[in-house]
Image (cartoon, rainbow, N blue to C red; front, side, top):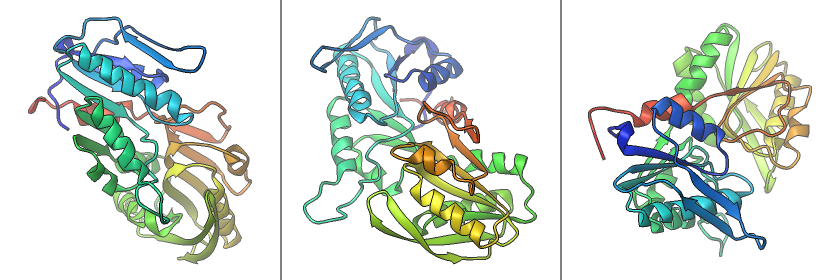
Length: 309
């Protein structure tokens, strides 16, 4: 999506998490609508848009992270309220798209959950979706409206170039699926050394490192990934790299899901530093975690004076 942003014709509606939405609206210089978002005693969601949105371009900002029903369902109701309030267009800014990992039938008689959620989003009248680092690019094909998947490769590359020397540096992919991302970032920072970890996933959220393709000995190692969930894979990867002579292990990932035993796993002595973005707010932050702001990245990808809705 490339949109002509006219602040006087736009309005932002914040979801349950207001931090990233408030930053986005401020940098885009558009007003934030007054709205009600609360729950009845039985858990039913109640929303109301209190401002006039007739013929406005509405931006609803909300990542759909855990607990996902408390984030996703208000978005759907806010979108329907905006449609019934005669909004000109409705754009969903969802930096983290929940269910993105369930993008295929991994086993018989299972749903393609990403497609289900995409269909639900379309059903409430949302015209555009903007997200960040989808787990799989093929997920874009599930949407029956325009969607923009913003990559953080350049953001992370800038961070690496600012804080690390390329001499003695290696970029690491924690699995075969992330090899393309690792090579992209390595090219952006001018690092020729890319290491691939071969892992065996023997259960949901559980894996073990089986083989290291490349030589980590004596090097500063940067593991790049899109999601840190329970951090079991990352923790195992850091341990294996250190056991094979790695000097320093830094983890860079877009989405800090941090579920289950993530904080325990990330506290491992094998992990020297963790860099994530604010696509998901972090409740319990570890001392070695640095958070990069992606609101400017969102704004720069949406604001373009040469096109319009």
